[in-house]
Image (cartoon, rainbow, N blue to C red; front, side, top):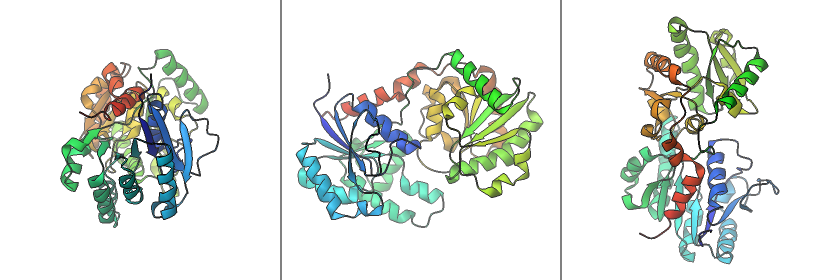
Length: 378
């Protein structure tokens, strides 16, 4: 039986079909929360009219930056929320809160924000000059929000300190996964067979996978770490044949021309249609991320598909390591030798399933249920 709550979810950009981690977060929460209550998703007119999504999608926001400043958009959204008798409004990013905050206060609808990451920290780590402006916007919206849900539990305390927030309004709501348990061995075998045949790799090679769009600077930095630091060390110390698969579009031409890319242990595959197949086919997933904010969604996705992951500390922030058992190995940032040693340590037991406790916390159905429970007054 569904909860009687009616919740509006504001996603101010095209996310259907989902094409990146932020899209996947919005889509996954919408799919599973719609099973629990009346869940209305308001997004942009760039979303397809017939997307086949299993939730109610209303295209009330325009594409482009004007949606963040337009009084007409505020009136349209306010009228919709009032007509629908919405009980709660959840924002998928803080920036739209500057426009909609006054509308929600007037309608006496609680404003909540699902904090994907601390945007000002992400922009500061990427060297963007405008990060103080971003911090100002976040501060204004977060202080006025009734509840703040953080994808990363590691960002709750820093947010409370940076924005002087009340701890009781801040809680975790993680990025979820679709599987409810580790895939069976036959799925791994079928995926591996298909990938080996497609690319002509040998059966003896261990497949080490890094994936993510290289248009995102932290991912590009990770590729550089793999080429210039991790692979040279593996060549010296690995006592087995291996191939590092790098998947994701947007790699600059300057990288393609690097001598390291012609190395026999490296296979740059670019954008692949079915990344899940490559994750399933891999023996181990690499996550040498040293910058950027928030939870690295590729880490959750790989663990959910039963893969072992070796990561730098920055790349594993926000993930509950105690739920991952022996499936996640973490080393200090930039410590490429320790990274490789941890890889050697994890490989022999990489076939172990991801613990059930991981899915109990991260599976989308569980995430949606916790979100609904959080709406009840204590």
